Image 1 (tube, helix red, strand yellow):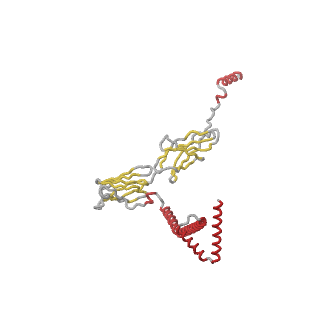
Image 2 (spheres, rainbow, N blue to C red):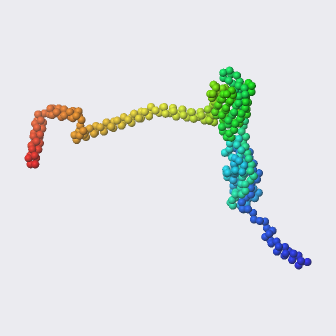
Image 3 (cartoon, rainbow, N blue to C red):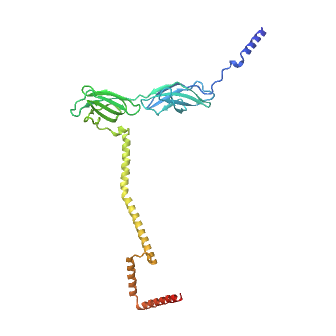
Length: 328
């Protein structure tokens, strides 16, 4: 009996080796993360997921998040080191698609399932009346088209009733508004809608582009905070005031500097004149006459003895010159 059992066990081992009972080697990369979800976080999209059930040959080091604006085309990627990520580079109203994968020392694993998410843009009721400026009566059946200028770009339209009244819901943003009625057209560019508003429209002369909304706040049009505008205006005023206060002092310094330059130039001119007079160079006729008069006056004012000495010296000098000429 024992021999029969032993023979059977030996036959099993020969047909199915021990290695055939072992599990196949696992992948070195981690598996796909699970339970990928998205939610709103202020103006951003907040994503969370669960780690994969299998981390591979080593521990998970990070996660790679993929994003795209159409399904199956997820080329935008960011790296995260926890099981959550806040996407801050999003536009309200746009739809984004996401996937996430895990990474370990061996490489990147499979991606998770794909999800999509859209941040809803708040909508506001805008209502008012379209009137004819000549009669101040409402314009019935006027066609109003609101063209959204910032992403996602879209257009919304409505028509006035018999009394010229209209009402429409618009997402927050900048709009170009076009109104058509009675062969006339009026356009207003970059009107900012940021809450429930009443907008009364009025046509101008036929064929002209009229002002639909009257006064428009430039800070709303440009999206600038009024506090920032006041702050920069104050800085500009301080800078201008400082410059005006410092201007007299700057002019005083410039005057002193120019005076020093002129004094130096005058001194240089005197030195050059003295040098030229000494060398007998570049003496003007006027200056030469002046010097001759001065020399004549000095001779006349000399005492007789000095005149005689001078005459003797002149005669000696002439005699020496004659002797030199004879020798030559």
